[in-house]
Length: 379
Image (cartoon, rainbow, N blue to C red; front, side, top):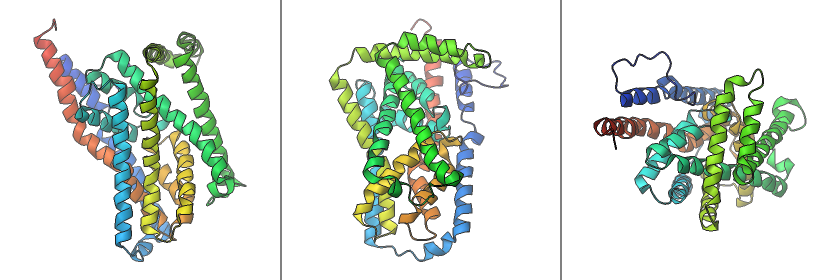
């Protein structure tokens, strides 16, 4: 059992199994866990605005129909991003879910990712649980979520060096000094270190999925049987079993299963990174379209660095990187406010939607199904 499902110190005496499962599940998303990224993000934003006199910069903003158009495109990019996620899940589950249930799965997955650090996998394990509770076979759930995460990683692994060589180091890292200091030279170094970790991990997963999953499981269990690592051995056994299950599921599939998922992945990530481009155009009308590739490329680098940050959803870190990394394209003092606007569009809504959907999902998929099983134990 994964640690985010485990209840701590909770008295469950007198409860049905369904009620116990529901209570354990909801405790995994306590008020503190949900509010922490919000507090961190808003706190860092307030500090950055105060330090940069962002309030005065906002007073100098002139809103026009041009700004309205670009903000509309920013929201449209968000819709395209989520729609492509839905298309991908809908396709990979062989259309077993209705579009509404697919929407719920995607939103709750995003919610879990928003309040969990990317360094521990975000909402990966939660997504497997929720998909299986939606009536998808456990094996297929593991296959779908593992494959989608693999595709996301492949997009990043391919796109990062592509934009690096297209844009160039000087333009890509403009706004930070890559020559010295932790935040300068360390920023450049951190990007390549994290990118290297991602590539190695995805190659490892690719080997497990398409070559020899049994060997990978044995290797994982062997490594985590060493002294000092044994506490994670059971989790590695589970991970190995999941990789074997996913590999078996993918071997049965042809190209017609692969290419729609790959296309949806590319479109979803492109739409995701287009949001900032639209925001910059809305508040900096003089920004030439020649800068769009650079702004897009910078977001690829930012996204990679934020992946291994310890804060939930990269909260706080994302705002700081935005301020330093994209400030060169934004009027002086306005970057912190636009960083907040960016997160307000692309991050905080998933927390709000998750808070609305999660209790209803628990009642429907844990309590209701549990009660049905209790009434019909042989079903």
